[in-house]
Length: 61
Image (cartoon, rainbow, N blue to C red; front, side, top):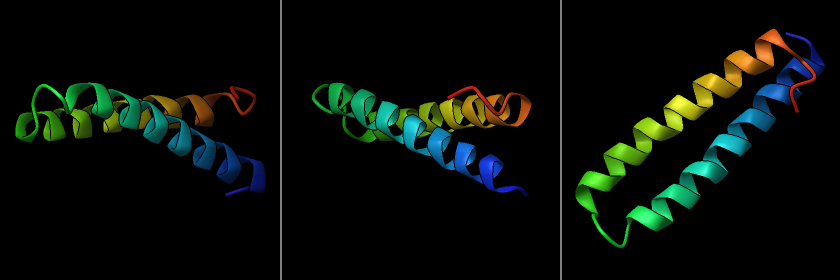
């Protein structure tokens, strides 16, 4: 693994976690138990999309 590749993965991880925290804050008011697992799946969805995007194109961010 090269240095820019690792950096883009870290960036995508931060990007996905910020998005998830934002969605979690919106959903936490309505549903607590169900919302957590939903947001966890959303986080992994965003992370995989970001990770694949970072692997395919290094200049995505």
